[in-house]
Amino acid sequence: MKSILETLSEITGKAFEEAGYKKEAGRVSVSNRPDLCEYQCNGAMALAKEYKCAPKQIADAVVKLLEGKPEFESVEAVMPGFININISSAFLAEYVLAMSEDEKFGVNMPESKTIIVDYGGPNVAKALHVGHLRPAIIGESIKRILRYMGHNVIGDVHMGDWGKPMGLVMTEIQCRQPDLPYFDESYTGEYPKEPPFTVRDLEEIYPTASAKSKEDPDYNARALEATLKLQSGVRGYRALWDHIINVSVNDMKHIYERLHVDFDLWNGESTVQYLIPDMVKEMKESGVAYESDGALVIDVKEDTDTKEIPPCIVVKSDGASLYNTTDLATIKERVAKYDPAQIIYITDKRQDLYFEQVFRAARKAGLVSDKVTLSHIGFGTMNGKDGKPFKTRDGGVMRLESLITDIQNEMYVKIKENKEMDDAEARQTADLVGLSALLYGDLSNQAVKDYVFDMERFISFEGNTGPYILYTIVRIKSIIAKYAAQGGDVSSLKIGTPVNASEKDLMKALSSFAQTMESAASELAPHRICAYIYDLANALNSFYHETKILSEEDETKKGEYIALIDFTRKMLETCIDMLGFSAPDRM
Ligand code: ARG
Image (cartoon, rainbow, N blue to C red; front, side):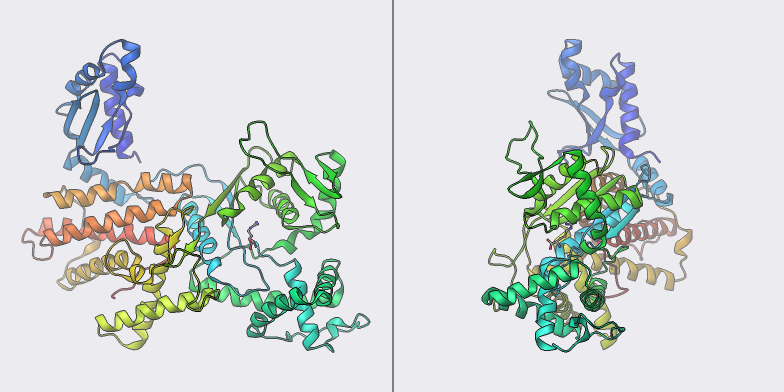
């Protein structure tokens, strides 16, 4: 389906051609001065030099040919040579009607590709904390956006499950339960099916072990030894590790589910250990990797660098593999298994340099061809109102689960105040609306920027918030329900030509969906969708306040109104689904 911009560009292009200029100059874009016009064409400016005349003169000639075309409400050449365009209500309505009948609402599907999104990145030994919020929800939204665009998207959680934290946890378990068979290397029987700890134990074991290791060198040495035993495949350590992974992953799944985050692959650093020895050997043999101070490194600096890019360390001087090593091996595995066109990593922006090194090393070592795009989305920090990284009231690290519960509880209180609702429904509604507050509060910011977690603002039903969007959807649902109760049949209605300004504005807001999706997908930017729905919700609410919808006497017009707001609801719901939340029926 042709977008508004394509149609306008075509018409304007033809006029340029007719006037004796090249067609390409007719490209129309959304106005960057919405106070002056809706769309604009700047083509005359670029032609001036080539044709040796004033741009305004060219624009005047083109505008003469455009005047009176049914697509335009007004078209005007202004100094120094811009063409300002407002589109006609009939053309706009025709587009929105076609959009509403299009399966993808007017978005042109790109060629479908396989894309891996690496997000979440929790470390297994530790409980999920607020720092895990952003990678989970930004990654989830990017995955959903790319799926909407028709791509085959695979989400991988890429857990940290292989390093020293695992050794620390095992050492602490051994201190507490030395007689467990896992630690008896002469034991050859089957290991117990039940883990010797609960998830609550685990949460407390890691911080205890970590603190002890810092004070007690002997304890620290034992933890390193345990790590090594695990990594070299000692049976009992491997079995105990399986328990840790199971218990911890189960708990994680439950928390991620509360965020509507879900992964296709529960792989981790451990998954690719089997590839490392050969990969390292090949790197050495081909000469891309060389020894430096006992470590094996790959040089990744390039002539065009404006800042220093240090070499990528593949193996440490003590022979241990590290974060880099597993990321390189993971690229190798992903290429072999899924043949992706792109791999996208979502982490804190402090890992920008790290990923630059890994990407370059992977290309240099031939793990990935130039056809595969490697992208890193580095996000900023979620801060508290004091401008520092968000903490609990007593300054500790807040668990992710507590953050979710807090915001849902606040929402519960608010909903109970506002509405008569039985407790079960109020809880369910609060969960949905609270989640929207959390997700929208985050995703409405450009990912790279830091933002302030402001509970009061996020849960407000007014302003640029998730609850405001949901409130708008609920408002539409309630009008539609009344219309249906009066005997109306929504499914047979069609959008018509707008008869007043707020109706036209609502259609205008709807019509930019295709552009929104194109930029959200190419920039991997959920905030584009937030901006679209905020605009759309505002336009809907202005329309609602300025129009008598249900009491409209002209039944045809009333039907058109209903069709328009119902389509607005559909677009809002399509969009919030890509952000990871959904709307209740009332709130
Ligand atoms: N576990 C890592 C961390 O805590 C994040 C993993 C990100 N993904 C990756 N492929 N390195 O920083």
